[in-house]
Structures are given as C-alpha cells and as structure tokens.
Image (cartoon, rainbow, N blue to C red):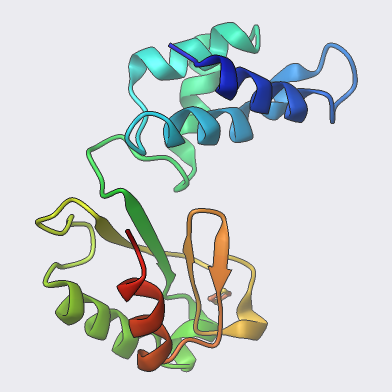
Length: 157
Ligand code: FES
C-alpha cells in the first residue's frame, strides 16, 4: 500500500521528531502517500499511514479530514490551491480566480476534461506579503498576475 520510496521519504520526517513520536510525521506522511495515489486518499491509504506510524486509525482519519491539504475525491494531476483570504482578496484574487476558471474552462472544485488540473479556493496560506498567491504541490507562486498565471499554468504537464 505504501511504496518503498514513500516509506523512505516518511522515515526522513520521522527522524525529525523524538523517538516514539513518529505520529508527529502524520501530515507529511499523508501528503507523501497522497502524491503517489493519484493525488488523493481513501480509507485504505489512511489506514496504511496509521499502521506505518503505529498510531490509531481514527486519529489519522481525523487529520486527513480536518485539513484542506488532503483530497478524498478524484482530482487533477495538479491542484492549484488559490488563496481568497483577505490580503489576496484585496489584491485581486477574485479576478484571478475568475480568470483561471475561464482559462481552464472549469469552475473551482472541478477537474479539467484532460484530468490535468483542478482549482481549489483555500484560506490564507501564510504568504500574505506575496498576495495574491496560489500553491501547486509544495511550490508557492506569489504576486500573481494574469500573465504570470499563463506562464505557470501553460507549463503544467
Ligand atoms: S491572505 Fe492569501 S496568503 Fe494570506
């Protein structure tokens, strides 16, 4: 259920915490497992993470369903997590969201026909100084303009 490669990545995170506190790596472990399972989690993958970190399944499920980082429905290969919180909103996020929807031909929450991209509106990602911004994978893109969005989105494969 969890590949050797994923286990190696999770193990790196586990070493960042004191011995016996491996469950502290749960958020990164879920992210790693999600990335190798079509960018989403299900009951089996969540339980696999719980087993690997030797933590209760319900506690792992709580983390996986509380945060917006995790997907539980089919999503695109790339999720554009665009912030629409106050700093980004004041710097044009709503206009950029509308631009993205028109460019991709989908509303937020939906996946493009080719399965490549979905757009998700999220709350503050802690990069207000670079507002407006979005995140793809672990990369932040800040001070967005329509031109910048074109450059970034047109290079997604
Ligand atoms: S309000 Fe958008 S990153 Fe903080």
